[in-house]
Structures are given as structure tokens and as C-alpha cells.
Length: 244
Image 1 (cartoon, rainbow, N blue to C red):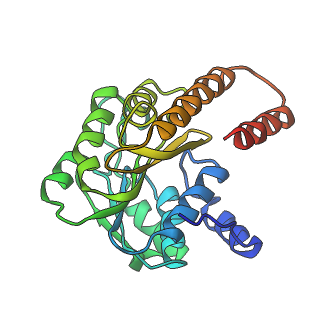
Image 2: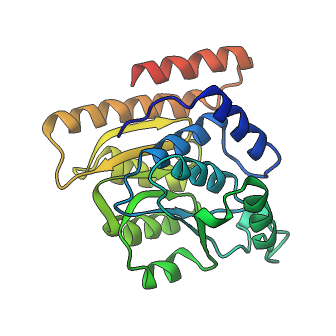
């Protein structure tokens, strides 16, 4: 997958479009989503599990529009996750999600599905070239998302999982099913996103590299809990990027 840099003017436009959209996505993570969506060939859809108010959806849609134009299928029940709710009351996010897409000019590139991941998976019959899992972070739900959607991912397609740093559910599934798997090569991480390319079976060299990346991921996860000045944190992130 050709992940060439984002042109500076495009990057500035994306930063402006997403700055006011609520969500937990770093700029570097957004850039990764854009670059991976831009590199998609159109053999399958781009599927996002968990859209919230559209921050990551905009990065994916803009990337797709700059590439082959694969549809971004954005799946979310739009009732908010546990950390967004007050008590057990759902938080309706769909209207704000659509408004954010319209402001970014990507509404036509996105197919929203207002449903849970399991409900959507039961009736989704398209091939998937890029899969971004960022739904319910409880382990059993992340495991369900992976098990339901991984079979739909094309061989050669990429799977990305958000919040695999400091969140037990996504972290555990990523380590079990990506870093330690025989079904992924070209594994890596950008901040809290772990990614990998699906293959029928990876090689011994791939598995050795994946274990090395797992060790880096464990160290990065531990260091993420240490309070350091922002400048030092930026240096540390750059070092981990080079080590990959």
C-alpha cells in the first residue's frame, strides 16, 4: 500500500475541517486513516465500526475521494457509548454526525448505517478493503467486532483498530489477533491505532517482525502512562515511528 505523504495544503484543509468535530483522534491517527483510504483500490468498501460525530469518518472520506473513491460505510447506532452517557440514557449523535459530514463536503462519499456492529454485519454482503474498528471498547464487544468483520476483509486489505493503547479491550484483541496472528503482515501502530494487512498465512519473517512490533507496542503502552513534557513526548513518538 502506497502511503505517500499528504500535501501540506490538503493537510491544512483537513485540520480545519476536523478541528471543531468532537472525537478522540490525534492528527497523526487521522493522517493514517486518510493515507490508507486514499491508497484503497476500490476492490471493496471502506468500513468504519463506530463513527460518533464523524471526525474519523471525515479523514477516511477525504482520503477515499483523493483515491479510488470507495464508499465509506459508517456504522454506529448513534446512541453514544458508556463514557458519553449520563446514567443509562442514550445520547443521540446522528444529527450532529450528518451536519459535520455536510460541512466537510463528504456527505455523498459516506453511507451511514444506523445500527450496531452485529446488526450491520448480519446484512452486509459487500467485500471490505479497509476496516477500521472503533466501537464499544469492552473486550467482549471488540472481540465480537473482530470476529464478525474480519472474514469480510479482502486478502491484501487492511484492518485498523483504535485505542489499542491504554484501553484493555482493544489492546487485548490487537495483541491476540494481530500481533500474534498468522493472518497479518505489515503490522504497525500510530499512536493508539494498530494496523495490519490480511494474508492467507504470513511468513516466519513476518511473525518475527510482528513479535518485535508487539514488544514496541508494550513499551509504548507503558510509557504512555508517564507524565512528560509535550516536547519530550513528541520526540518519543518520533523515535517509536523510526523503530518500526
